[in-house]
Image (cartoon, rainbow, N blue to C red; front, side):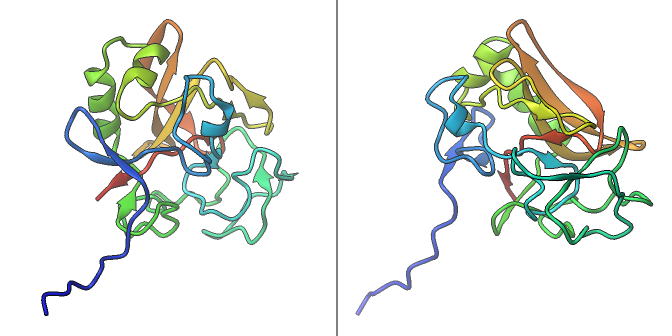
Length: 196
């Protein structure tokens, strides 16, 4: 017989204009964005380097206690204008074998360059271009160092796995502009995984 062993299906994916394979939605989102401001497509907001431990939920509890380990052992968003991990660990989200890689098997955080290449492929360098792209990136907002939600419905903030000094690199876009920048690692941002 010529039966073939079925391969386990990975997460729903999409091929971007740069030819890369990405998840078709943000981590924690229930669907692909139907508009830039589709709240069901916003997904979760991760502190840089943390795993999927509950802290990423927009309604999670908070604590001001820093973690001395890679896994804080609680579902609280750690409030600080800096790094939730003391001392810092630059290797938590590095590649598919990153200690706390939150992405499905075979997927990982994109590098700064991978995210920036997507931005450069958009029809316009702003939130409309982000949604018009094959990735349909929505304005999912962010959670600041006080754990307050900001920008949902107006700004998109997406982590890369790339570190920059004591911060990490992220992609942001609003109605008028898009760029790469640095954020301190305690901020909660959206995550869009790329296939390795």
